[in-house]
Amino acid sequence: MSFTREQQDMLEAYGFDLMAQTEAILRHVREYQRGLQRLRGTLPKRRSADATQSPVAVMTAHIQSLREILAQFDSCLAEVEGITRNAPGDREPAPVVKGRFTRRSRTDNRDR
Image (cartoon, rainbow, N blue to C red; front, side, top):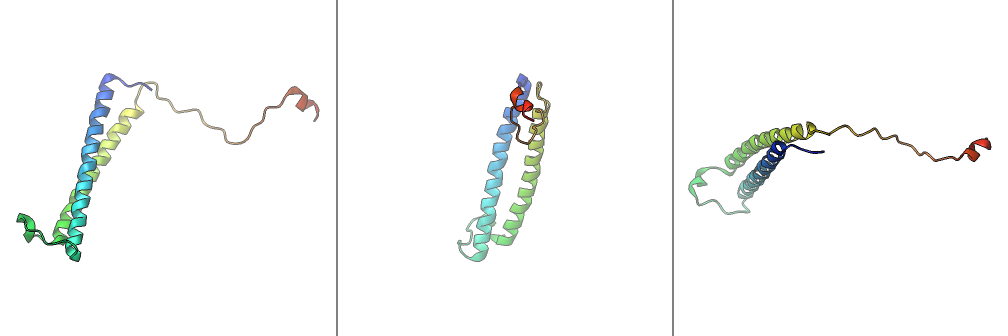
């Protein structure tokens, strides 16, 4: 399978996008977990400007952000998949025949 230079550049750019989106996903999951810990009382209350938000509101905001990022992530994966499907020389592999076949010699056929 070979890709044009443009396709390679696009795949590289999408790779960086996927990494950035993965980091954002992890960041929002971490903040969701921190909100849950605050709700349970296992983490001290915030002392920042967001201290007025309840832990549930914080968790809900991060869930909404996660949904948006996951939609972007899925879209990016679809773009990568489209590029890889349309690669020159990319053909479906020959079907694999399942089963066990043995090679018989001519003498094997005479015994029957």
